[in-house]
Image (cartoon, rainbow, N blue to C red; front, side):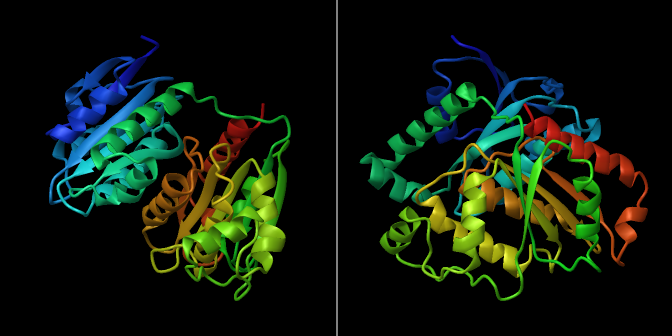
Length: 350
């Protein structure tokens, strides 16, 4: 036995879920928490959230837990790190449930290692290609991935640097963007962090063409992409050298901008050669009306679950402001700016 893990396993459990839990935790001492009444603050802990969702995409006891966590505040899981197993009855909802849970827990103090999810849909077809590459059955693959994920969690040592490099990507207009105004205030507090900003102008990045795997891998091995351009000359080298990536994301129609979406898609070629487990992800999201959580979840699935970026606790600052300059007039905004800047420094600086 190495260390005690908190297994948060709410509500109904599927046979596959039980197998995943047992296989992954066979070498560890753990404490199971299956109802909200048993869930209490966990400080500096290691956590496995194992959730089964039915055909409606709901786990009622998990919802009760999230309500309890949300009502407590930002320190419920202070200093803790976690991973997830999500299984389901159908082909739908497993990913959306996973990223929602990640966002809730992240706002309550949980950090997540890169690619923190083992997901099994109802048919388990989402694991077919991984099983083929491992020369295993899908069932065997699921159990192996589960065990590997827990081992990564337990062995993880968050990286820090004396003078970390922060890469900031944005595509907005400095004169009118509340998001950039907010970032300017945060930036002024990031003493001891080297910051590189890249403006993704309209039309400067073409979206991914969907090259065949071998073609994409061929270009990726050379740290290039079929389209070339600013992605190859500026973004790829900056991503490789940075310790953390910060995306500035105004809410455009309940999603990130087309320019930043294209950048994320085009990172696939680089990802074929270099994964990003040692790089952190931050974001600043400003919505005119509502929906900042939708963008945060989009970034979680695209860059943490898929592209392996680490999520530090409180990875995103989310605000609501419509007219230019309104974001700096919000109640207690200076406090939140200072807290977000301090979180970045605490995460990155040795």
